[in-house]
Image: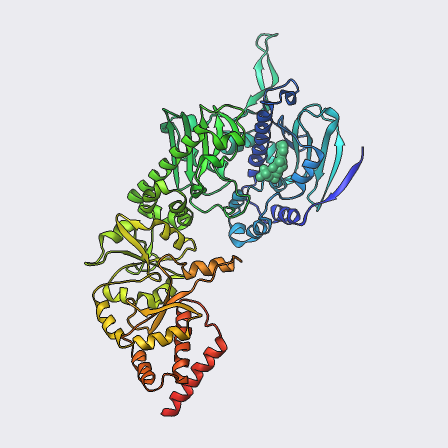
Length: 635
Ligand code: ADP
């Protein structure tokens, strides 16, 4: 049989290098990772065997076996799971099957992770963590159901290369054999292995066994002792989610969270409940305390694990939760679904739909409760996940109100990053104020400086400050809250009160000038009208009531989307002295070149104020300098 020497992909080399040279603490997690892989492999074999029993090869007792060989200095984790073919092993153990590999390596090299090596747990580095404790690793595997001659042997000393050769293997599944480093031999000790397994892998459903040598009374000769070796189970395998809540300690909850989420930080909230009635299921769900690092990757796995009567069907089932709760981790165990349920069936299954509804309600209720009773913690949650939760306003019409009550906002009336809510806003609206107002922006500072806020500030009206890209869509979808309209300060005709009428009076005098501005800018703007929102600033651009928010338009454009030409409305402030001055020129000479230049300059300024660029920045700059020269010459 030929032995082939192959080179690791660059990212694997980098990862191995980090494993070996940078990470010193929590080395024992390698055992957790190997047992977890073995358990996954058994889950897959068991699932496949439901429809194809031949892969059992007549042997269906699932088991993960630990073998500590002190003489050879090796620790073996052996499973009778699905196993790997040669191609699969090259793919699985020669590359990192991660779409965000670059970010992943960068994160591993970051200070934060180097200083807190326990953080690597969140990346699911899995198999490669073996090299923290071993200087050579051998994997002998055979795919279930393929015949004993088709085994494969993989070996590497993490020196950039690995070898692959065909081999015979009697039993299906995988043996991972670690040649332990000289100073890591403690992992051959029974008490050490017991301790690590108890700590990290107790709830692994399949038996994790080890042969233990002990003294026993001899059955042949009375009074004499004999030494025997016996297989002993080291994990309890209790499905924690089926236990009574009162019997589970916070530590147990947290440890299980780390197991299902690959996160090393404790979760922010545990939601554990049993549903009875139209659907019988148990859910143990977690809200993480931090954003999972891979949540924006395209292969981020959404949804809790799905079990049917304690048997794992899949490790992530996205049909169990709405997308806007995709940060939720955990387990759902149903008593109603058939064991051999497939992904296709799940998507249309009524039971799954009921579970999804139930979970959604339970999670939203828990969040409402957290907001009411643990506001600090809720704010922390919102800073991490608010952006995702908000999507629910758009996608889950039935629960719009409920989600609206969970939203937090920065506002013009709150300092710094402090939040307000729609309830609070509605409760402190000024006499005469009818609508709820918001402004979008790239930063709080930018939003606060916006001229669009002038009149609102003047009147003491609160304006919500929204900084996420999705906000304009979210708020348009929300449309109203408890009968009050929600309006963007940059959109539509804002009528604040009677003071507008006075402005209109002043504006009457400007009607012909406005007509001229409209004519000159007819290719740029849809309309020119008097503004109810400006106090100090001469003019600004606003979108139509149903038009697109400039922040959103910029975002979509930057994503390369083809946005239809979306002309805005130029609003002018009739109380500003510039219009009186322009009107004087206008009355003398309607064709004045200066007047035409002023109109262009005003439009350029309005563009700057909404965060866009003047159409011709060079012409804009030279016009401004011309005015400066003229002004300076007067002194
Ligand atoms: P992860 O488990 O996060 O996918 P690993 O590096 O631990 O990452 O493993 C990579 C892949 O190798 C697994 O996805 C699986 O396909 C395969 N693998 C690892 N261990 C086993 C095993 N004991 N049996 C079968 N396949 C395995």
